[in-house]
Image (cartoon, rainbow, N blue to C red; front, side, top):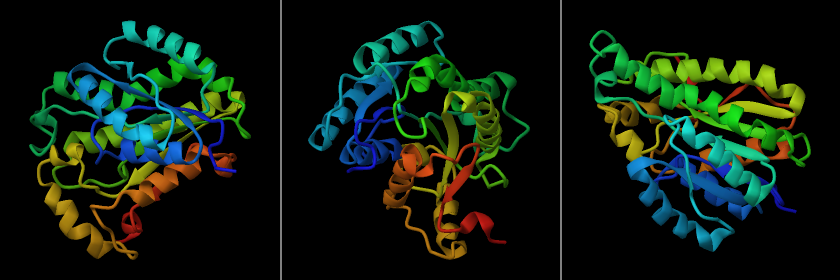
Length: 262
């Protein structure tokens, strides 16, 4: 039996085929899940086009419109998922954004308004999604309950040019622990997957991304290929599945081991 047989999984953040979220959605479908995607704003039409490329792997319904900066959209999104699936066994948070002033300019130039935008979209949105879909996640019939997975980038270190987004990832890791504590009694686990750098559309928006590319493979004991996200997707499937049913409040690193090296 496939790892996610009869699982209902909501995947956010799918924009293009090179996105980590796309790879996770594809592997979830291959492992027997039924998947629903969400998109927002100008990216909604792009998500809809990309979703059609997932159809060959399994059942993907219409893309759910959900802008995490618009509180009015959450209730409608929950109603739509409830009508379509009746429950959720998995939720993938792959949402992140920071205004240009928050990346590559150091920590002292970004105005609070821009930092607040980055916080709302990249970090607070995880709490908003868990709050919105908590009843559906609590209704999961999966062994071990539902799994919430947030895509992360090592929040324990200061990386060049990453600036305020690094702060958001550190906050995301802390938030994940607090959420895990709160929703664990409902058989909902919350974990973070800290991936090494992958060349995606989102990565291209980070000034100096080549600095990560040039150094990561040298530091990682297992090496690292910025063009290959398959290990990230495979790990995500394990984390969504009952295989890790007793793991919560954890950061799982998929980065060739670079995070632990001096």
